[in-house]
Length: 174
Image 1: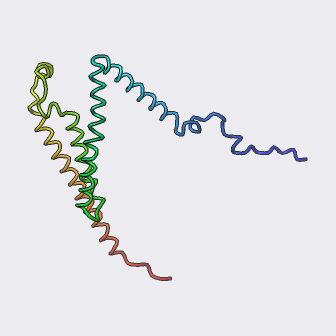
Image 2: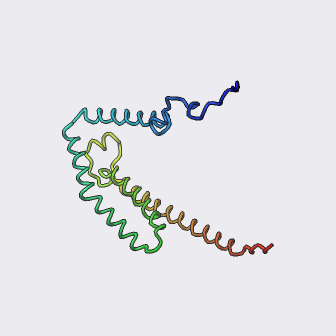
């Protein structure tokens, strides 16, 4: 009989309790996810503290409006955009990203952009909501300009990359 110790197998060396094995991700991911749920719960409690029925109706109305109206509209617009661009589907994102960000800003700041605020906003903020529409248009224009610039840089890079690849001499057979 041999007195040498047999090295433990890989399964024996692995700890029995592993958060990654149970959860699928590392413990930092789980901690951040729990913190996010705590923050969302706190915001929900604070939000529902006032007009609970009004807030719940607003959430239900938002879900219905999104699913029945907005989703078909932006899915159809995306399909039309892809059809208009033809065989260049990579260009779609250069339009999608600024449209998405501009739409998100419009959704968040709609009451101020549309000047549908009460007088108490002006009293609390000390300004009128007149500047929001112009600022939103400027930001939207800047987003599209930045996207166009990014597309131009990408096109120039790919063009110079093709030129340098064609100038390379093939290797000599050995």
